[in-house]
Image 1 (cartoon, rainbow, N blue to C red):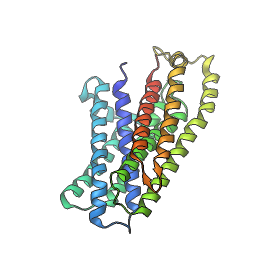
Image 2: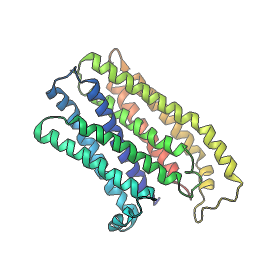
Image 3: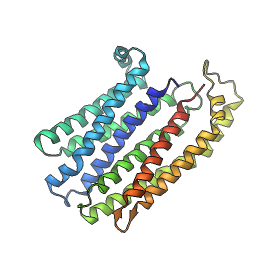
Length: 282
């Protein structure tokens, strides 16, 4: 499949934004509960992970352009091109995140303001990324379900990282661990339910355009969508199983690493399969 660069790019960048969001949230929750040194030790590994993930995603994205230097041409027409906006906000997101990570590495302190700005830029970047496909001519993308799926991946992958940040630090205050874990799991369940509840509306939309005169030459997105019914069903089942495993990982005021590992693997597999189905249009 020739769209693997887009699959890897979108998931890596969305994972990066999710990790940044949850890391920033955890630091705000721990404002009074942890010392500066403890916050630094807690957040730095995941700031590095978010930066590396985002940087790798942007590098992979150039493979889809055929000739990497064509990326500079994509910056034209910012006023009308969602692709240009996405590139700009992705670059700004990575710049602020990278600067914050560098300061944390060299000065041993966490620049919360930079993380907040990076989080905001990351949200805008994912919105622009979603809008690229919503405003395309591919009927299976031209629906608000695309926004929901992309932001769903942000929260799902970010939640996985958030729970692991608690699991590898059993010395964290129990109140902080409980607050972050419960909020993370609640958000994960909520976004998963939203994604599932949107599917009937999405199917209704697709049925409305199935017999229309919409043509997406040379692609056949509706035919591809019909052929991938089993893949979509498997993806949703795996995702639900993964979310359930992550919910079960919070037991007796601590994170169970066995359930967390199972849930993390299942959610990652589900997100890859869902994205595979999203980009399969011919």
